[in-house]
Amino acid sequence: MLAFATQQVAQEARNQIKKQQRKQDIRSGAVQSGRYGTLAGIADLLGAFHPPTGPFDPEGSWKQAYQMHLGSDGQASAPGFLEIRREVSGAGLTLVVEMQVLHMTGGLQQTTAKIACANDPLSSPKSWQLESVLADPTGRPLESTRMTGRATVKAGAVEAEFGKHKRTIKLPGPFTSNWSLFDAVQHLRGKDTAPLRFALLEDLDLLKPNHRLSFAETATVKAAGGRELKLTGYEQIGEGVLPFHYWLDEQRRLLFVLSGPRAYIYDPEARTKVGNAKQRGRRKA
Image (cartoon, rainbow, N blue to C red; front, top):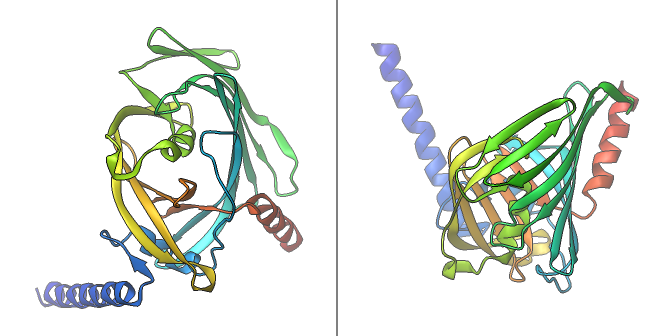
């Protein structure tokens, strides 16, 4: 009984410390947000973040790269990058995705996808090709781990082929992929945005129903050099995932995607930085 009471006192003390720290962060202007715990979770990264400059047209063709971070309690690591290229040709829309994730063992997971999308509010996939392979610490692909697939959406279902295996995924209604949402959020209109309801096809493979994407809030943060950055935030909630928070600048350019301990930070040099991290890992090995 005494041990339980002591634990309660200790937990209450920790809660009070956290509350005081939150108040201090908000007063300092490091994070000005109606819901602490999203941007505050990357406060250590924001101080080194250099916002992009120049014009941006979300309706046109573009390429965006993100450094992928995992961390908690202010400690962050950079395990990989995500690069998405948007190609517009006439009425057609294609997203070209490349992702690399470093594993603790020194291996590297490489994923590429080419997605033909509908020009709708969800950038809904219509067909795609997908490839994934694991490379060893020297960078050599392990062919036994290579997986290739393709899929087409027909009559309310996904008809997919992975190697010799065929699969049908029935769709409950509107759907999109996690990668497509990186494009879709950049076409939303702030607080005037009507909530979007859909099923999420995570990594173009796993269907998770009952998702909603809606306007959340605006926030002001300080980036590298004390530069003030005004952001618009959207929130995605649904079955099978932690909430996602998408943060866009005043030109509707997507800068940050946050979900639990995961963070995608806009960085045109993300590919190079991950390559350097791989080289350092090989030298240590």
